[in-house]
Image (tube, rainbow over the protein chains, first blue to last red):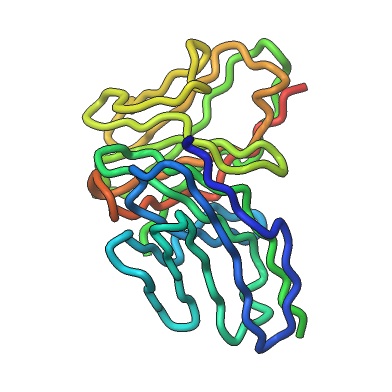
Length: 112
Length: 115
């Protein structure tokens, strides 16, 4: 029940296109949903996060869409750039707990 | 920008040996974490640490593992008798406070290879 399922495993997008990564969860107690970006040889870096009281959060080219009833959330990267090529992880956590439950990651490649 | 630093970047150890992974969290952070990532798999929570004691741990964090904050700056993960399946990337993280919405800042990891 603590699983966070992420898809696709890999994604190739043309420069300027929209990258979409999806995540689904089972535990309705989750109430914080961050996305992390990881470049090769580096640790995960927080990109953007959302709470379930809003359906969408936008920061620059990055948008999280959240569907509480479906227990799904997604990351949209608008105007994707080659510099966005990285592995993206969704995660979830519960108020009062410290641990993050990560998805399996999506390797994004943006082709020039 | 302050960052979490981990040493060494790569550790090679014989099976059965003890290994200590070191981390220097961001200086004003109070909560510390260890995660691991087996090659090709997801990042998994091991343990969280606050006020000189473990606050949460996962099923992975068995008696072979221990954590310590030996001084005011370092945070260590010790694996007492390493096994082949301990081979993974180990990430240290820290956060300023506890609770939802408090971002966890990750180091670049230590790659542990058990031979």
